[in-house]
Amino acid sequence: MKLQGKKAWITGASSGIGQATARALAAEGADLIISARREERLTELATELQAQGRSVTVAPVDVSERAGMEAVGETIKSQGGVDILINNAGTMPISPIINGRVDEWEQMIDTNIKGVLYAINAVYPGMAERKDGHIVNISSVAARLTYQSAGVYGGTKHAVRAISDTLRKEAIRFGVRVTDIQPGSVDTELPDSIAHDKIRAAVKDNMYGEDMPNLKPEDIANGIIYAVTQPPYVDVSELLIRPVIQEN
Ligand SMILES: NC(=O)c1ccc[n+]([C@@H]2O[C@H](COP(=O)([O-])OP(=O)(O)OC[C@H]3O[C@@H](n4cnc5c(N)ncnc54)[C@H](OP(=O)(O)O)[C@@H]3O)[C@@H](O)[C@H]2O)c1
Image (cartoon, rainbow, N blue to C red):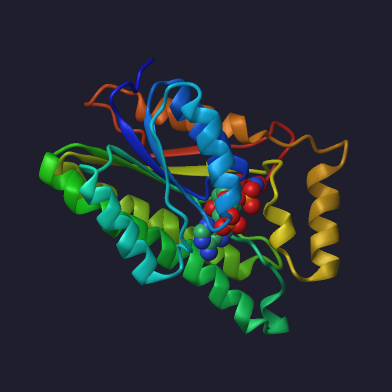
């Protein structure tokens, strides 16, 4: 167990990559604080991991709400801080920009960018004070490329990658490492967040078709475990993980 005695905060732990990462971190001995909006799912996960001997705190929050995130930050502080942040919560209600679905743009910007920043702000001061910490931001292959109908989503993920690399440069001298994880297609609930019926159907068809086997959330969790278990002099700055069949 490589993370015994460490504590990690995971946002978006109620499903997909976040849930798999919570399990993987717990299997390495880490204690956890788990967040998302669906409290019932978090409680189920906490019960499962507590049965394995881990300490797990359920901290339900909407990451796009600054006050709520500051309150979780206070809870974390009162528990002595965290060693690792998995900044994973995200949403993908994609559609062509020319369709002008402004509410969905705001939802993505508020969740995928502001939520990521609020989480960083909640843990960074404590990490810097202890001169030890690791912030793992989940961006996407869409942080490197552009895809039609995913302009705003891709914009949020390009922003996360830029934030990650800038924070890496700023924080490293204070003992805080930063990793940007860029998943390709992973089989999760993410396409359910697409409200545009035609695009949701097209994405699900592409993601779940037999000719396009996706990654499993556990494949991304394995990459995260690799990043957070390196010796102190190693900085895994970025990891791009695609299914073999995904060209772009
Ligand atoms: N799946 C892919 O192919 C893929 C590829 C590249 C990047 N990613 C990124 O990976 C991350 C995880 O996504 P996933 O694929 O695991 O999808 P998922 O199964 O839909 O998980 C998304 C998680 O984010 C949480 N979440 C969404 N909005 C939230 C909000 N406003 N406040 C708090 N929590 C919120 C959800 O929990 P609640 O609904 O309970 O709040 C859920 O736990 C996202 O950042 C996504 O953009 C995924």
